[in-house]
Image 1 (cartoon, rainbow, N blue to C red):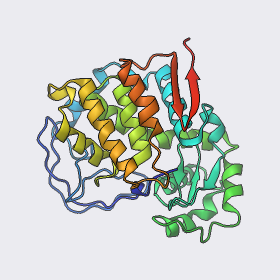
Image 2: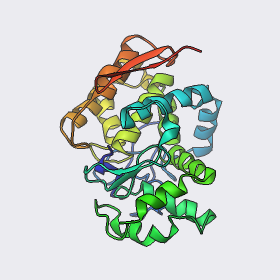
Image 3: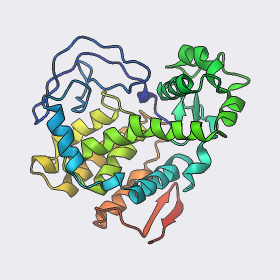
Image 4: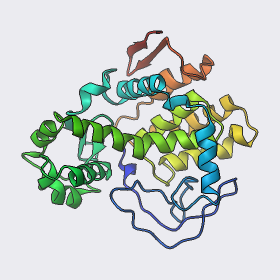
Length: 306
């Protein structure tokens, strides 16, 4: 199930004290093909927002020089399987390209490999981008309806044919590739890059990524950047001289409190933290190496060693 917090209110950037600084600017309307990135006036900052970096080229080079971490192909596969266990109770994330359902969680239709939602903008981003390169795809005719229902749980203009159109589109390798590209651009890459700047290893990068997927890249208290800001008030991140395990526990505590408060989901289940990520952290598996064993909603999942 996906959080309503994937719909963002975008405002003027605010200043943060760090090696990277958010610059001043006017209120910005984010284009549908670009993930929301600026902090709201009362929101938490995104240090990697476009135009936010004072020395962007230097920071990007620094990130590129770091070990791949979660971006290494075998680790990225593990990440995809872990997220699929939490989102869809399966390790076979590739079986989800054509999946589409309304979980009645306020987000409209949830579909695809990462749970793109008709009510939270990321589905609209995906379909708009794909339609530019494939104008005759089965979903193209639903773009006006997707724009109209964005931010709501409405199906108006989508029923009765949208689910069949999604399943048909998902049979195309190009649409599958488009889903992966949108997942990486909106969720995976921002989470991993920021985790690296915060001094986190592979496990920490995954914890950021999973939080980005669950909470959405929002700047409010229950979005990813708000949770990160709350964690930084409890513990120093490694790049600021803090202990990695202590900081990650603070981050997990902040995310868990949002889940338990019922701000992002209807079921308040924190299995992905309590019986998965916290176990990896407790075991000291900072490189997220298999074998891995964890429970999700009282079901046990395993990834064997190579």
